[in-house]
Amino acid sequence: MAHSKAIYIFILITLLSGISSCNLPLSTPVPIATQTNTPVPSSTPTLLPTIQPTIASSPTPSDTAAATPVGLSLYLPNGIATYPTGGGKVQYYDFQGQLLGEAQAPNLESQPFQRAAIAGVLTYSPGPLLPPLVYYVFENGGELWLSSDNNTSLLKASPNLLNLIGVPGKSIMAYTLLEYSDAGLISRLFLGELQTLPTADPILVNTNTEIYAIKPLAISLNNGQAVGVWYTTVPYGIGGDIVFEPRKTLNYLDSTNNQITTYLNMSKGPAGISDDQTWVAYTPVDGNGPMSIVHNFDFSTSITFPLRDDSNRGSGEAVFSPDNQYVAWREAGGSIADQPSTFHETIRIATLDGNILTEVSDTSLINISGFPEIGWVVPVGWLDAQTLVLEVRASNWDTACIISVKFDGSGLAYIAPGSLVGFLYP
Image 1 (cartoon, one colour):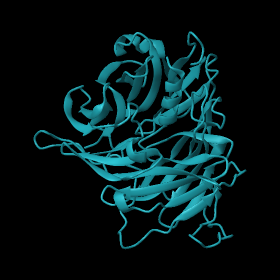
Image 2 (tube, rainbow, N blue to C red):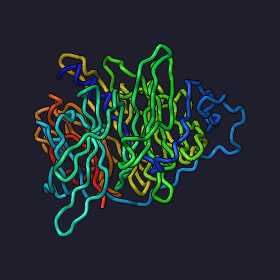
Image 3 (cartoon, rainbow, N blue to C red):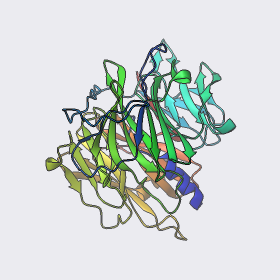
Image 4 (cartoon, rainbow, N blue to C red):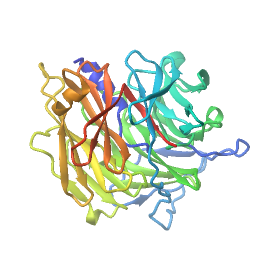
């Protein structure tokens, strides 16, 4: 398998998890929070001062260490969108593997996860009414496009997009655009609904001298409206035999008051956030350590799952079940760069009180995927409270499929061909 493709896949993959933008009136511009890279030594939630444009940072932190994200209800998907080999379109499937329809997506890249977002719901009246799709293309320096009702249209120029995330069943999105400058790497974080996306201003501008970029991970809602973004920082433009994205810190930006709160310090990297945003999975910042989980950032009760003996490359990509009963993650060992490759992966599923329930090896997925070799396996979400979804990629990196498995390792099922774009919701 090509080494350059392995790195390309790494840069595009992240966790979940589903996990977009505030419907703000265009007549009321949002103040831009401007942040420079500041290491935070504490492992407990640390408040950073509110920063207003062109005004000096306030030295007075907030009185509370609690962010205000409101948890999502138990909202289960009713379908999945994938990008097939050959590209040019996104295909919508139900969980019985029935093709519901297609959205045109010319020039969407072959690994589209977090480079495209479903912007609405899947309904039936009586046939399937497909939600719109927002997606990124590299052409003309980078652009965001809309695919809806079998038509495509340009939304806005978007040079150097890092990633794009959405909210289940809504047209809310968050994304980061990057720019190099003499002062360092500039990240501009945007939050908006589909209607405001073309004219939205950034809600955060960050300049980092160590070439770390702001990466949104999840959007917080209150009464159906976006009120904040969880984000981490990642090194931009790196290469090498990398398996897990090296993330540093977990921050929450309250978009209602531009206050930033840090919840994981510089020694920890977030690996996943639960749907209700009360559980977080994290690893040591180098990415080579074990998976840990914490509830409401009470680190006195956090749980760490020791690595398998053969997982010398560490762990990452954690996804929580929608009822917060289980967590699944990926561990890896060996090297993609070896010839022949010694790389291997195991998907582990555990209860949130620390009991490992099952392990799914990459080789056990060969028969159901139909691939002669497995190149990459990532847990990407849950169909329901008991059924995990995996994206499985062949060793040539160009062919992928979506497979499901029960929390106890039973019930392997083939869902759809193609790379994951996102889940559909009613």
